[in-house]
Image (tube, rainbow, N blue to C red; front, side, top):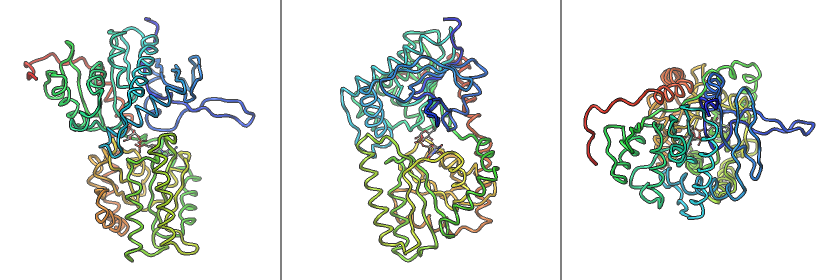
Length: 473
Ligand code: GDG
């Protein structure tokens, strides 16, 4: 065991995607996104290993090396994917943790699959991690792994980070397996959340549900101290800076603006997900034409909705709903040659995304609940010209950091949303610059690299000795 990895990341997915070349040969390409680029250098420096599913059901793969990282695939059968991933992860936990904006499904077969697959992840990790090494487990699909892993390997230092919100007690209480999930998380030494409020929800639940002793954000469990802390995730500022410096990206941004007809460009970029508030923002935008506040050609909305979880029923329903809505808004308000809403149900590469951010006058980010929302931070990171405005939901984690520069909005309040969109559209350049500068300072100083380092620094710091007797439960 001693020659195993000193640093292990465990996530549902491996950080690579399979690509098939023109001659039909398959190969791997590093997945885009901040998490991977923040962790990849750490992995190389520390002889790291990443454990996760390669993305194809029923396929058994041997460990392999890619991009300087050791990758260890975890098997998932089609049934696992259906019950553990699409089921318990995305039809139970996802809606429950996002304010139950859709009804969570409570199904015992899904739960059994969640336990089974979490155990498989724990076993693979236990076999790969070197003596006393650091293990960092990611996200809601793997909340039982910390406890299962600790039972197998008490020598490890275990961290867990939740990328999505952690619900208040009143909602979490619904979950038939609430105790198992909490105990699962308590197997970690450090449980990280996006926001301090989520860490408090967790500590409060440990106290109320498990009678655990606690002191501030520390929970005393099994003769150990489990720290609950907030680490707001961020974006790879350097990667985005390099993208927007490219002449082809600048040229593409100009072309997009011309193609959209020269009016004010509003942009939404989201996975097609019911938590993202896509229908609310389109409704508000459409009504502005009905009210006469906007005229076709004056403003245009480009909504990119990246396909996501397409086999989960709620996602299919949402897709139909949005397509109908876009059809209705365009049918009512567009004119020949001037469409008011451009809806694109597809995914783009990072260059095209950067060009879209540069082309947008108003970035509209209106989730009903979101752990953080990286799109908002990416937009800000791309606007070195200090132009553009951000309309941001109060219910996005990012509102805590960007609230002073963004136009904050309650996405459930359609009139408020309409007013805010108009305000954002009509913001003078000097005011845009002032707001953008405030937001950019925050994002530049708190990038994803700092996020990863601060989590790992905290994980590697030994727990403070107990000074005062913690409160009884
Ligand atoms: C979860 C939490 C938390 C989108 N379309 C394309 C594309 N994207 C990229 C964006 C951004 C990422 O996907 C989406 O991140 P978000 O944070 O906005 O949302 P979730 O996917 O729900 O992420 C969230 C996050 O985890 C991190 O902790 O902030 O709260 O829900 O980076 O740019 N990327 C490419 N093509 C697309 O079409 N390449």
